[in-house]
Every structure is written in C-alpha cells, then in structure tokens.
Amino acid sequence: MGTITEEILGRASGKKACAGEFVIARVDYAMSHDGTSVLAVKAFKDMQVDKVWDPGRIIIPFDHLVPANNETTALLQKELREWASSQKISHLYDVGEGICHQVMAENGFALPGKVLVGADSHSCTYGAFGAFGTGVGATDMAEVYASGKLWFKVPETIKVTVGGRTSKGVTPKDVALRIIKGIKTDGAAYKALEFYGPAIEEMSMAGRMTLCNMAIEMGAKAGIVPPDAKTETYLKGIAAEPYEPVHANDAHYCDEYHFDSGMSPQVACPIDVDNVHDVEEVEGTHVDQVLIGSCTNGRYEDLEAAARVLKGKKVKCRTLIIPASRRVMLEAVNSGVAAALLSAGATLCNAGCGPCLGGHMGVLAQGEACMSTTNRNFKGRMGKGADVYLGSPLTAAATALEGKIADPRRYL
Amino acid sequence: MRLKGKAWKYGDNVDTDVIIPGKYLRTSDFKTFGEHAMEGLDPSFKPAAGDIIVAGKNFGCGSSREQAPLALKYAGISCVVARSFARIFFRNAINVGLPIVETDVYDAVQKGDVVEVDLDEGKVIAGGREFGSTRLPGFLQDILSAGGLVAYRRSKR
Image (tube, rainbow over all chains, first blue to last red; front, side, top):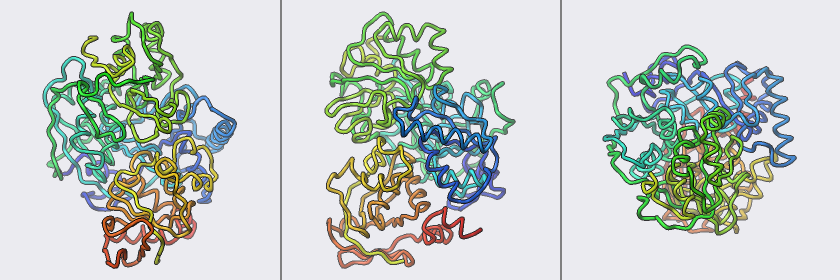
C-alpha cells in the first residue's frame, strides 16, 4: 500500500518504500541531453569506470543547442557522439529529432510503473505516463551510467484534484499555471504530486505532459497522472518494453489541494512562475516576440491550437514556432498546420529547446518582452534584462496577432 | 569540518539561471563557471575564498544544471546556508562537494558578517547566536567529506 511513488520506488528497490526512507532504486531508463551530458560524461570518466551499466537503457537526445551555434558547442557535441558510439549507446537522437522529453515519450521509454531519471529538471514530464520520472544533475547521471542505480529519499505526496471541465480557450497549460499559483514555487519541494479528477481524465496525453512537465516549477520531485485507457492507447505499438501500471493503494497524502477548471486563460508574469494572473488583468501588455514550442507546449496539439487562432490572419510581432520533435513537425507539415502558421507570418524553426533557456535562436535584447509557451520566466532567462510571460499556445497566438497580450477567447 | 567566512546575503527563490546564466554552460572548464557566478543577480559578487552565502527559501530552484553549485564552489564559496533548497540543487551540491546547510539564520545575518559552520555538529554560528540544523544522513556526509561523489566512488574502489 502507498502512493504511486511509494509503490514504484518499492518495486524498484526491492523493499517497502515509505515516505521519508532512503532507498537505492534500480533505474529503468536514463536520459541526458547534449547540454548535461558534457559534465555527466566527464564525471563518468573521472569515476574510472570502463563501461556503462546497460547501453540500451541510456538515451541521449540532442536538443539544447541544435544545430550547434559555435565551434565550442560543435566540438562538445562531436565528442559526445564519439563517446556514445564507444559505449555502444544506440539511442542517440541527433540534431533535429526533437526535445529530450518528447523523444522519450514518442519512442515509448516513458512507461507506467518505471523509474526514469533525466539530467534535466523537466524529467518529471514522464509522470504523464504513470512513471516515476525525476531530474538529476550530471554527477548523479554519471552514477547511473556506471551502476544503473541511484539513491532516493522517498518523498511524501500531495494529492491534487481538478474538478469540472475546461471551457473554451482554457488549456492544460492554464490548469497547470493555476495549480502553480495555488501551490507556489516551493510548495511541493522534496515532495511528489499526484493528479486526479475529471479535468485530468479529460486531458489528452499531450495535455498531461504539459501538466506534469511543470511539477518542477512547484519544486516537486515528480508529478504523476495515474495511467488509464488513454495511456494504453498512446503506448500501443510503441512501448520499448512490457510494463505494469501502478496505482495508489490506500495511500496517505501529506496534503490535498482542490482546483476547479472553470477559469480564464492564465498568464505567469515575470519573474516567478507562481506570479499568475487571469489574462484579463494583463491584456494589452506590449511584447516584442512570441514563442510557441518547448517541452511544455511544442506538441502537435499545441501547434494546431495556435494555427486555429492564426489561420488567415497576420502576426504583428516576431513569432517563433519550435516543434517539439521531427514527428510533430512532419504531422504539422502534412496536416496543413505548418502552412497556416507560415502564411500568418510566423517563423518555423527546427525541433529543439530554442531560446527557452537563453541559449540561442531567438534570445531577447535588454528591455524586450516575450509571450512564451515555455515553463520559466526567471530574471534574465531568455536574455539579460528581458521579460518573459508564460501562457498557453492559444494565448500566445492571440498575443502574436496583436503584438500585446491578448485574450484568445476573442479569436475562437 | 568547520568553515568560517563572510556572508553574502540573498533572498528567496535564487534560481540556477541567475547563479549561472544559460549562455555560459557550454564548456567543461569549471573556472569559467566561477567567473560568472551569480552574474544574473549580483554583478558585485566577488567572494573571497571561504565566503559563505546566506539565503532564504528554495535556493537553487529551476534547472538541473550542476554548473550552478560548481560556479559557487569555483568562485570561492565554502558553504551555502539557506532556509531551504530546491531538491536537485541539494543533490548536486553534495555531489560536487559544496557544503550546504538548511537552517534559518537569515534574519540574524547582515551582508559581510562572519558566519561559522560546523558541519559535523550541524551547527551555524551567526550574529552571536547558535542555530541547529538537520544533520545529513551518514552516507551523504561521507560523500561531502570525500569532496564529492566522484572522489567518494573512487575511494571505495
């Protein structure tokens, strides 16, 4: 008996895992991307271990600075390819394949009941599939490369229930921002979140990924949606291996929150993700750039939502569309969504993280502002002295049409 | 391990983007991280070796970048004392051998005050007062004493 996290960590450690205890858990899949692998590989080499524990369970997607923006990055990426090859790691997803978390989902590595660690804080995204997914740093990742195991303090779990049905113009991103407003940026620190209720059941897998992706913005170790028929349907034919779903069983929760999905579109204003307002309160705020993409909101559903708003119209500010993966991009091309976005004046970039972390491809100048579908609006994240507002793809698309923050419901 | 240094004081939610901005991550030269530590928040940050950061809650929130504790360590910081830490930063700090203590000395310390930390006892002395903290479990203390997880692992071979 226990929460989903306790059940999964118990199975992975071979003993009963209650909140507060330390366990050493077997890791099913380990992910590190071009950004974090550099230090992880260095730490692995410094550990003086010859071979990784299981090359088939290590996944290396290139997404943070793709294609390479300068010679230094290019060299680091070249070295990473060579190291992966020398270790016989075949799951290397090179430039253009997509953002790590999307690649993990599309290729069936994020599976119910599994333990996944990623050298990226948004690895909590895998909770959308009923997995225990959590972010770690480079040296922890090196330890996993070496041994396939990692220590965890079993977290307490907060139960979040979202009632009602979302209305027109309100998306899983809005629900996620509303939850963060309630729980606050450190409200789930060291804890796990489990999501329940009609609004969660109604969400597509893409929507659940958006929600679980943002669990870390409340400090959470994991954010998990119990697997159901939708999970099964998504995974049919793509699961990388057999899996056994795990559900909470007579669990104890340290706290419970209830939200209602009857709400306005939500916008997180600088410089904290919990600085969340109804769109009506911030409507009219000038922006210089709109970004639709990222591991939070770069999936086909997100691009299609933006196209619904932009089709047949023209954007009034720089508008970047960055699909989460090659598959997402192909689907958008084949369905006409990409054409609608391009015709509206948007710029379609290659799959990757883009300017979300201020790396390249759309970084902002001092004094500029961006309405973005990404996950962080921290001081200077997308450029020193620049402001980031977070919202849904619908809100971002409406904002693109006006060059200022706009309520998407007027365009639906 | 006992540490003593002058305090640099910051508030709540100091995130890893301000500790080391994303544009400086693409190198494996740790000194570079140290040169740009805290650049996003405090351009005047120039610690002497051994100085200590005192902060509010949720220190190190945001990205999983291990460059954040590395930047502080290579800038000369000997310890971070905060009301609370974001969990990935907490693990990363231990793994790279940057001592961290979770206790509330915030109101007792002004910038530039001398702060003393006794890691073995889990004690912090600041503003003439003594503050207790939750001691790390033994195996984490061992990793910290070894100078980080890589050194700890090598010592076990």
